Image 1 (tube, rainbow, N blue to C red):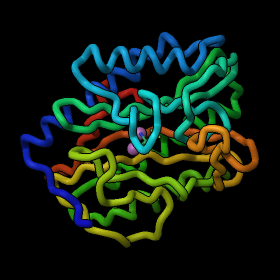
Image 2: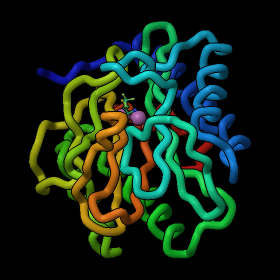
Image 3: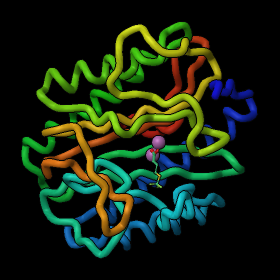
Image 4: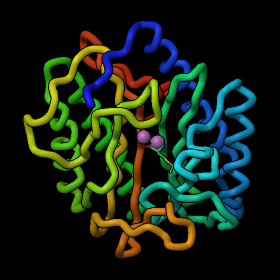
Length: 254
Ligand code: MF3
Ligand code: CO
Ligand code: CO
């Protein structure tokens, strides 16, 4: 599958959608508190997206039934919203993908519930630094896998592992397009980046082992095999003539 070069019109549509996804993450901050059920946060998410004339891409996607993924603590990604209550000290990821005017925008970030341990905060801050290091490799002429190479370098320096079973992905006209964006990779390999390409970078960084296991009960929730913490930030990134624009980076806070 070749990588789509988006037109100016498509880029504008994807930017609007990614901005709405970013606004949704911001809007949800007030609800991410100790005692909140993740299913109730999901309702707030769906309400907000629909109020803005969009639909949540995850709802009905391969049988997923919710407007976002909510992944606390040892959940790596694809956490299914449920009756679980958030607790003081939790770290939790919310991942939102919007469809606005037919265009997809995909972003996620971490939230702190009350006051997580220094240990947990360090993992979260490092996963944010990993996303930034990946974005720095986004410029025309560079090779795609330099993103993953540089992400892994930072994670490993801190003694963390990088999840390789889930990747970033081309995005915009569909939820998941070519290419797969690896978050751990060999230097100077992969396709050459060109202006107009749009894909996500969404490194999942684990405190312990990198492997995941899927919850048998819901068939989606991916957890660390050792029960240790995992953290993730995601942006939808456009390659420009000069470098990149993170289309979902509306608030410049990660
Ligand atoms: N938004 C996720 C991503 O970043 C995908 C979620 S798919 C779902 O690619 F079905 F689990 F919702
Ligand atoms: Co994504
Ligand atoms: Co996402």
